[in-house]
Image 1 (cartoon, rainbow, N blue to C red):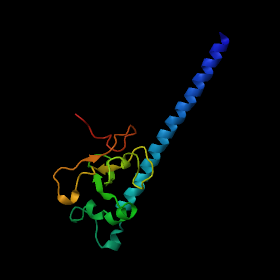
Image 2 (cartoon, rainbow, N blue to C red):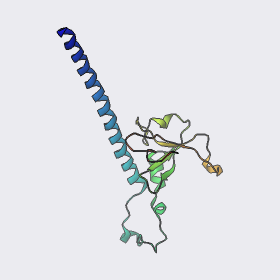
Image 3 (tube, rainbow, N blue to C red):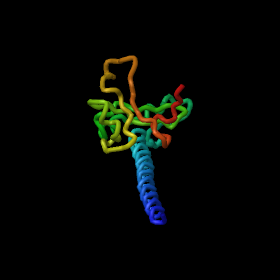
Image 4 (cartoon, helix red, strand yellow):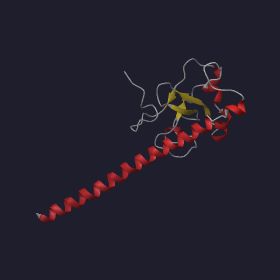
Length: 154
């Protein structure tokens, strides 16, 4: 009987270590993805020195955040980039890409590296140049609070 208890305890410990490793890998990937998207955001919205630009950002200035958006810098990083999605009142602020299919960016980041959270992507059947009224953007609802997790579904 004692031998069975030792075997069961060993199996339990091995399973616990393996599960812990998977959990740590998931959280590390989530952290790396958040850091990666912060770097992409810095590329898309570079800090401007108001003295060099000759403008100040205030209520009387017609400049908005969109004027600070550097689309060309994002295109230089990834030619599949079609824009940026930012939703006020949330932390949702990500690049949007459009690939040849709807599979690749499900598990690849903006730099086309494997990533558990993927990248926000426009449906490959949408044509933004045609001025379609409705566009479909896919993205994950991650448990760590990133991507579309903050959207409330009714």
